[in-house]
Image (spheres, rainbow, N blue to C red):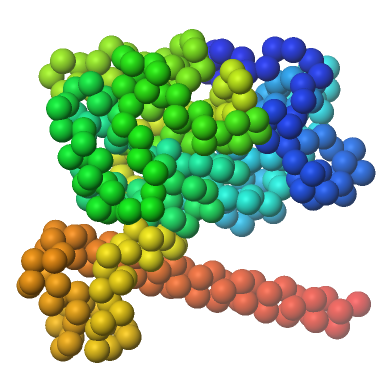
Length: 370
């Protein structure tokens, strides 16, 4: 999809950026950049190397400045949808230039596909993470465990949204399944065929608050966004009768403004959600964490160690074996990722030291020749 081909969020001039999440805290952080002649903007669409941003004067296209691109040391240094940035307004012909990204107060990240040592920011500066699960063929508690684990480290509040409630007679049982995974996380069962069922989702938002819809392909994220907006801003295909899946035609993340207040970031369906510095273990696996307090060893891995209260609970039928197996699998994945990150950091440090030493030798040599 071309960056300018979707419905505009902000046609009029003189927008109130507080509708888009601007706060006094952001204004204080931005003050030095304002003094340098930059204007605040929020990234509403990311498409390859071009962005659509919202300023007080409306929407415009923007690109990262050459200096910022040169100084970036990681993928996370570049803007993501939801970021607040400082832009240099566009000349009469051409695009604006993004020169700085303000510190993020929250972000939903995953391990970048194909690179175990790189973080990908899926959505930034979000207040609520709506974890969307389909109640058709998509319902998968193990996958939801993974999403809850990553959401626990995002800085945003997770909410589980069980979509397509009209396609099953087991909604209450599914709600119970999710509540068993994470008792403290709110759960809402919805159906876009019953628009009123979506109203509870608005209560998590309100003026200036941002929610992000996350989930696998076909769970109905864009359809939910369209229903909340009241018109089809995000294109979807019809549901396939063979598997009840709607097909999202866009591969871009984008932010939309809701009537009545609040914003949504819609994201393409994820084929996989690889862990990145997951920090939600105590909440996502509270049942296992509480049982682990009774283990003989504080660093018990719940495998072969003697006196393991978690394995004892499985043997006694108080903890489903699949729950412990999922915990072990995700723990092993997280440990593997951390080892690869440490190895990459050590390699980068060696390369940096080598570059600095080479530069120092050149400086000494040049000084001796002068």
